[in-house]
Image (cartoon, rainbow, N blue to C red; front, side):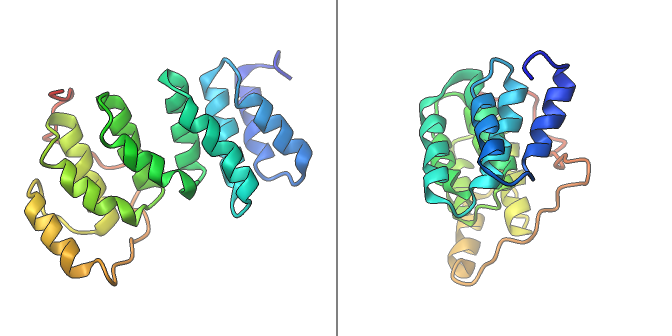
Length: 193
C-alpha cells in the first residue's frame, strides 16, 4: 500500500524477502521504481536476495542498475550490495574509476559487502590515485577483505597479492553487529578530488 506509513512500507517490503512466489517478486519489482529512495533500496535488496542462481532474475536486476544514475543509483547499489548480489561485482569494479568520488566510495563499500576477492588488486591500485577519505576507504576495504595491514603502500599490497592470490580466500566480514564498519581515524572528512 503506497499510502501506508513509510516505516510500515519498509517493514512490509523487508518481510517480502522471505515470502516465496512470484507475487512477492512482482511487488518488489514495482516498488524498485518508487520515488522514495529508501523504498527502492529495500525493494532492490529483496530482489537481489531472491535472484540468487536465477539468470533471468539476475539479468532483470543488472539492466536497470547499469542504466540508473544519480541518487537512485546509490539506492540500487546499496540494495544490491546488501542483498549479496555477486553479479554486480563487475559493475562495481568499473565504478572504481568513476569521476564522482561518492560513486567510487559506494563501489568500495559494496565490493566489501560482497566480499569480492576480485576487488583486491584494483583496490590496491586505487591507493596510487586516491587521497583523503577515499584513500582511507580503500585501505579499510583491503584490510577488511584480506585481514592484512600494509597501510598506504600499494607495492606491499601488490607483492602480498602476487604471493597469495592462488590460494587466498576472503575471510568472513568483521563488520560489527550494528552494521558499521570500522573507519580509519586519520582519514580527512572530504576527498581531495
